[in-house]
Image 1 (cartoon, rainbow, N blue to C red):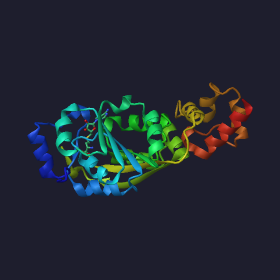
Image 2: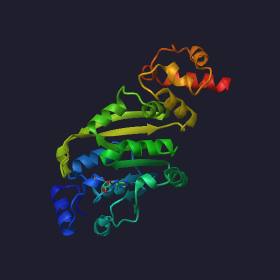
Image 3: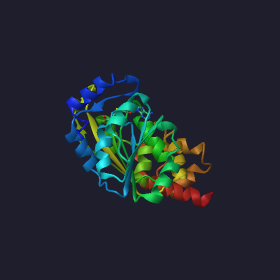
Length: 272
Ligand code: SAH
């Protein structure tokens, strides 16, 4: 079977099935099989791995993932690709589910898959306008995914892997880590986007802690306020809690790191 992620095969598929990339679904197809291989090889994937793919498009990544993984389950919103899947992705270990990934009960799905597979991964080249929503959805659902390999805008990858702090990035610091793996040139997509992309890996090695996320959200309610002012509305004796946790009350939410928040959570837990 020919690689889908080439200029020629992508043109062949788009012409044969009379498909145009739709902006509303953020469609940019990968046309470089070396890049696809590099993405797939950046994570150990074997027959004990189930990959959940978001947005397979015409199957550029699905086809390569399928060679290594025990199973690939791909969620695609655009039903126009159905005939492409019949021609190119007719493998026993590939399942395509049509629908909006944002609507899927991902935690339940992953729980089921974890009974069968040692590792469950999310791999996605997702539309940029829903990147954060997708990451948030997976993390906040508590889905026991082992890692996510995500093609995102370069700036987004830098933000997640760098020092930028938000409730979500701090929660990820607690659950595992975010890494900037490598840059992906805009030239390897059809149609070509305006900016470069990057592969972001989020590894999860702990269980989601709802109380921690709630505390982070309260702390970040108004970024420019002090931690004390943000906390006092929600947690009665905020001054005392901060003092016991060894945090100065005039600090701002993004000057603290995850270990500060964990101390604070512990103090609040003991007092309430
Ligand atoms: N993975 C392919 C296609 C990437 S384009 C490749 O790398 O070549 C992004 C894909 O996500 C498109 O196929 C688009 O239809 C799909 N998509 C967009 N929004 C989606 C959603 N909410 N749920 C599932 N798929 C979605």
